[in-house]
Image: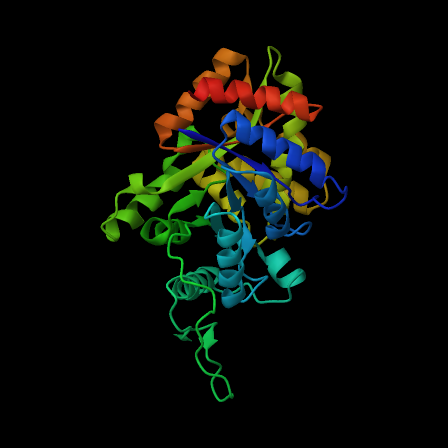
Length: 345
């Protein structure tokens, strides 16, 4: 099992902390972390921090977790990925996701309809570009070249590079099946080892349909890590974030994160928390999140307990443990990260 970390998030950009982030990534590389993933929500973009990290590191892989397919046309996504691969000596991983209706329609002004179809078309065009082919597509959402215009099918001027892996952040059953059919890796969320089949059964089904072995797909999942003899305060501190995921990561009508937790055995709780959050009762929603839901979604407790959680993820089929070490300082976080790597090994 490998270990990966993340940087950025919805609140990224509030503080200009790139040097602090870079120190964390550089030291994580020294500890043996396999990859770092940059989040893209409504704060910093996913690419700029990785480009900076590429200049400061030597081995760690650099992945977008995720680039929103609605934020860029597919050809620009491919151009960016090829550029990142070139400047990082092929350490770049293209992680893609559909985001959600609030971001896609509210921030980018695009329709969120048929997100899986948009993903399929995006991946098809990106792979054409990676192979060095002319970009031609007769899709529902992307038509290249534009019909009736003066353009013609073009291939990118950059050299072909089919080695760039494509990972997908998917949650719905059909999207998970597509991940099993086409992706090099899965960026998992709303995941608990206790109910791994709520996600992995669909990935496995898609892989089987395509004649692939699920073992060829890098399954990434994990959570916050805190090594402590008293996990109560940590559990309480994480409830707000989980309530936000259940209630606000999407609209009241469309929330893939909530749906995934419901499939994973938390149906009534997920519905209740979402209802309270969308009604503006955020404190009540937070209080409704059960302790066990937090514990199953993360790796919290004394060293023995965290080791058991790591084994639970491993046994569930996770091949890369994605961790967010807790700590008041970078030094604290790195100490926790070092402990995790030792326990994984």
